[in-house]
Length: 192
Image (cartoon, rainbow, N blue to C red; front, side, top):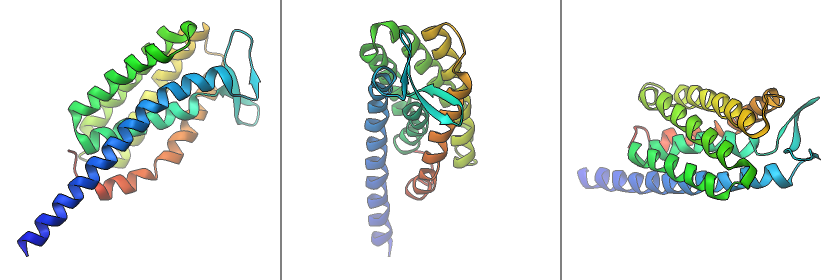
């Protein structure tokens, strides 16, 4: 019986690592996608400003909000499946990628907002994940999305005009991503 249990654990560990690396790749891919969306996709593109999408009746947000909200959850999955060292490596790689891939006018805003929000997400998620994965993901993502929204909007556009839309848009993305937590909890019942 012991060898069957060992084989299941090895197989589960393999699936956990694969999920972690998939989340790592998707996390890094979400950064250039968010920057591209902000400049190219929206129902309205503001001259010398972002392209906007509706996130609720009468509420607009820069179009990158969708991927940024998902990125916060993806980084949590990286940490859960691959460990804190790779979670931190994802943050640093993401900040560098954000600086390299951002349009020149958004480099500082994008990289700063990304780094600060992901560090906040990490700081909240890490101690909570052992108690409740769902609450860890929700609370850390909420903190991260608030910080990301305020820092990015202020640095990129000099004001917080789109703050309600930024927050709401990221909340939608977070709500769509949260069902993944059930899958992650099954695949990675304890942090790596």
